[in-house]
Each structure stands twice: as structure tokens, then as C-alpha cells.
Image (tube, rainbow, N blue to C red):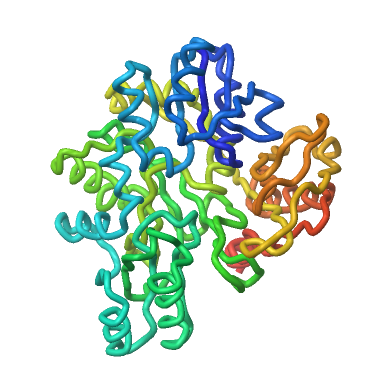
Length: 424
């Protein structure tokens, strides 16, 4: 089979890497891809939002399956477009992708169907939102309603910070149209976890869970990013808890979307706040996460193509999905200054020094004269497996230190607290 992966980040590189391992995949293409996907796939210089350009490439290269990585094409209707062309495509429709594209829509679904989540209110008017915040007993979480590349959420420490975040979004327009409407949400207590489920619109099958690190600095300091690292499995989320999450959150959400006439096919992501035996949703996404994909897919033993076909064809309930034991840890290397302004075009060295069984997934990279250089905020993800978290973490950081580019930044505490907690 000839497969096209849409996207250019480390998530898409991981998907390309996994699909290329299938005995039934003859060729993989990436649009637009990056310096990493160029090694195992053929990059096509087509933006993921250029549906007609992608369609021409599908015809030219006789592509038989499309796998969509990022949220923007999904929210823009790429699945609807290629369904009309008769091309098999993995991902939710535009209507179903609203579970991520509109936090207001997601909240309405959760309230209507009793899915556990944080209490919230939605506002289109700055003055009304400000008045609401000033009447609360503690600073709330401020969220841009639309897509903001993972940076539209502010968790303020004071009311002044909350109102400043509100002003930036609604008045200053830092998130464009995505921030004209905001969701003001109660602050949940607990530990964050990422749970994903493959779903064919009826059946939801959870993957192994993971933990993501959003803040740019150690000890969760600095602004939010798209994700600075991840590990799996979380020490506080055992198999029974994952089953409970599937029964109380993932499956009910899939069923709710089906009842609303918006069946969801693809990967549903729930960002959870876990407090003991309680789990509440603080966000839904309509695709695999980044960097969680980089710790999940290396532990997937079932052929990814087999799962994708089962989702598209509506037979996930008859498909066994197997995972390896052990643990995995991923560390994101970013450009200095990210998520603010940063330089680019810096040569990347040391990639040939990485251990053969440690994966380096490219994100913000490109080839210049055949050599990789930086071309984005998050540049690389170094992902390693081990018998346990401690071994996986040690191997990940040992290899991070071998890769170099000017201004390289990475958190030093990925999975550290989990290991310390387990040892205690």
C-alpha cells in the first residue's frame, strides 16, 4: 500500500516511522514532512491545508490511504474532502473535529451527556468576562475557544494575571479569531494525564496512557508550549483506572458524538486531571498528541496499518491491539526562546551518534544542501525505551546530550518526579 501522512511535526515523523515498519506498506509520503521524514519517506512540498494540491499528489503517486496528523486540516474538513474523492482517509470529519476546534462545543457535549469535566462559562464580551472573573473565589483557567497551537491556555496565579490573559486573547488578539471567544474554567486539582482511544465511531479502544509536560521550564515554570516531553506509563494511572476512564469518558463521548450525528473516526484524545480515583476532562483533541505519540507508538506491537483500516472500515471491535511492556520517555529539544521568538537555520549535529534503538523524531527541521537545520520552535524529540522509567529516562537524556544545535533548550526533569514517587 502507498500511504500519505499529512503534517510536518514529530508526531507525523513518528507515524511515518511506524507505518514504514509494516510489511504491507510499500511507500510512504509526507506532506510537507521535514528532514526526518525525508529519510524514510518521500517528502512532498504541499501544505496540509492545500486539499486540491494534496489531491493532485494522491492521483500522481497512486496513493491508497491518507493519515492526517495535525488538527488544523482536520478542523478544516480534509476528511470530508477526500471522502468525496473516494480516497480512504484516517481522521474525524470536520463536524466531529469540533471536539477540539471549539472548546465551547466540547463543553456542551460533556454537560449534555454527563461526562466529568471542570465547571466553566463561555464569553464573547471582554467586560462580561472580566466581571465574572472578579466575582470568583480563586483565579480561573483562561482558554481561547479555538485552535491556538497548544498555547491558548493560561493557568494564572493571580486575578491580575487572569485578567491580563483575558485582555491578550479578547482585546489584544494574540490568538486571532481563536481568542475572540474564551472559556473561563475552574482550576482542577490533581495530576495531568493523556489518554487516547482509537475509535471507529462506535467502539473506543484506549491506547497506553502517557504524561505530557506543557511548560517550557523545569518544575513547570514559564509559559505553555506545544509540549516539552512525555513518558509512559504514568505511575498513577493503572490498568483499572484506564478501563474506568474508557467506560466513563472515552466511550460515552464517542457515543454522544454519534447520537449528535457527528460520528468520530480516528484518535480521540482526552487531557485528564487525575485526583486519586477521580478523573475529569480539561480538554479533548481530535488526533494523536505531540509529544505523547513519540512514547506511545514505539510500544505498539500491532501493525498500525491494521488498526487504521479497522477504524475506517468500522470493525475495531474485532481488532486486537497489543502493546509491549516496559516504559518510554521522550525529551523535546527546542530552539532557544521558544515559545517566544527564536532563531532558525542552525545546523544540527550528532544525529549519527545516537544509539541505534533510540528514536530521534524531527519536528522543526529542514534540509539545506542535504544537511538538517533548525526550522521551528520545537526541533526534535529524542525517545527511548527501557525496562522501566528510570532506564528509559537515562537512555533518553544520554542521547539528548549527543545532539547539538545553537541555542538548544530542553527540560531536565522529564519523568523525574514519577521515578522518585515510585521509588518512595
